Image 1: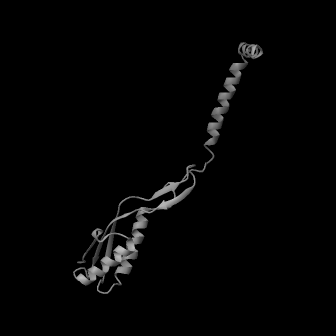
Image 2: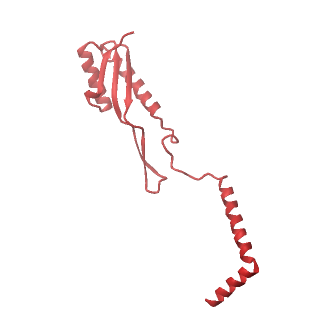
Image 3: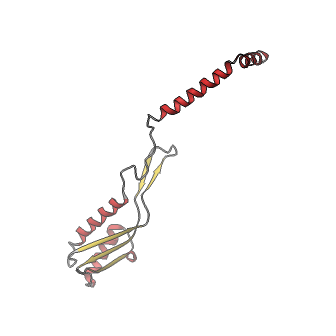
Length: 147
């Protein structure tokens, strides 16, 4: 133990410690600077994964418009969806491995169609929307489309 103290005292007296500290500091700064040139894997968030709530919502709306317009009596159809939240991503504890994507929930559906004033057509469309999107009829509004 005394030998170690003597060596440390000699090192401090000789100026070697100062050189060692300066060299270690310069090495640390160099490593920080060099690390800027490398990219490290980070978990991807919603905006980095290619998932877009707007695209997701637009795809469902266009699919619904196409299908609902084929229901007898519906005619020309327009659909508007409102979303409750954005996409959620579930990762393992390590934070880098995505295990699951939870799609946004649909808050409400507005359907405007030529046959929106016919109770039979409204019933058919309501049934189709509630089953296709797994939403309650209370979240679906169907009205007549006017030009």
